[in-house]
Amino acid sequence: MAGGGFIAHMIASLNTNKRSHISTFDKIKSHKKSEKSELHFDKKASPSQLKKIKEEIIKENEIAFKRKVAILMLLIIVILIALNHIGYSL
Image 1 (cartoon, rainbow, N blue to C red):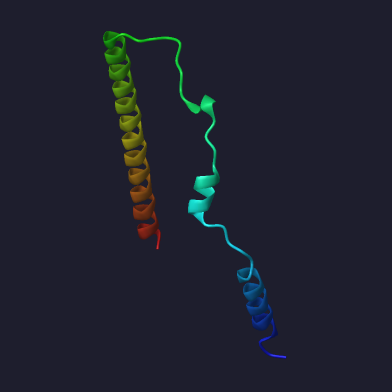
Image 2: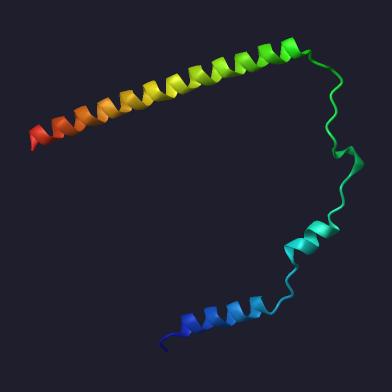
């Protein structure tokens, strides 16, 4: 019988659509926040320490970016050399 699989999928889809759906807004309303969810840090940092940490993070990000660019450039060069070599061998 042609189309038997399609009809079975249609019936399964109709059956799953019959179930009651819970709205996302209802889920959010029923979600209770615990009192322990607030962040709490025992240690305090001075503004100079925060500035030093910020500078270190910026330096680390710059180094990581330069590494990524270098690897990407190296891969592009290798791919171009490989494509050039394949073009001459044909």
